[in-house]
Length: 278
Length: 125
Image 1 (cartoon, rainbow over the protein chains, first blue to last red):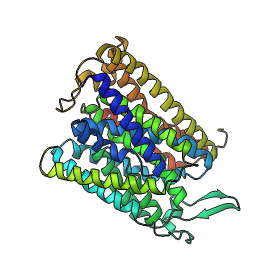
Image 2 (cartoon, each protein chain N blue to C red):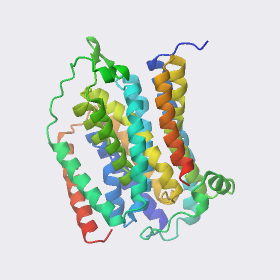
Image 3 (cartoon, rainbow over the protein chains, first blue to last red):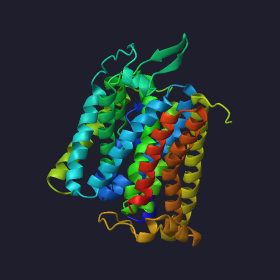
Image 4 (cartoon, each protein chain N blue to C red):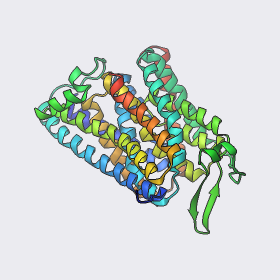
């Protein structure tokens, strides 16, 4: 395959991943690495480097739109980024030391678990809590606009959320994904932050988290310009188109299909890792 | 005396900063891509075996050096570096925003995050 054909095909595949990721809210980053390794036979280290770069692009590109809505909480984001960036550094260092088949196996497990999480109905989170002393001292309490006026919320269980965020950062740095699902889980389920605030704040955090491991990947020579270029441009275009048509699209069936694709890719990654072909 | 900033104002500036960073880096990557594909589009693509990037595509001075010589791969890498720098700039600006709001605790938190990011970019070479 020539570089031109390869570039066009990778760009189209990444565009589709970005589009489906934005339409379903599951994120496109998680299918990029399996797409590149299983279908384009790219070494998983190059694939993770390219994926990481595209994660920064989509997170930053979408953030501008979210800011206007007024849901994201800049203090919660910054405080938890201490945990995600340190985790991302740890993850990136682990990635440079463990064999690639171990990364493939972990990737497979994460994919299968993501597919499971996306099918499970989200437990209703009760966020009308009295102020938590630690969260209050850290100034994490916030509000967001509703048609009936401002609604106030008080995050709880800060240490649990902080620890989960460290884990989310480690996964992000190890696998080159945004790990938005874990971030939302930490905020929505553990800290009882309203769902809409959790998702928009998570999107803000993804870019900073990915930048923390991208430095390590760049310095170790994992970020290849020829591969990262079509991946980044494709995912960015796909996610921008996805957020534009999101309002009109019926996403229920798309979510089911996409989570099945994620599960199948997960099984493939797991298998290829176990037999040592990655 | 600094003008009093609000969270909304800080977030607004950060949103614009991020959008500008993405547009700028995507433009640079596109320019590099054009040069790269015109020159090397016909060569075989092979990413099966990991070799690691050459040293001058791993560091800022090397990337700038290559970009000056209009190397397609160098210019793409410059765009990717600008993209990685975008969230770093957002954290740096947040330090300023929190300082303008008079929030010392969050000036400290943002500085800590910035230190981790800078360590990753510069300290791990």
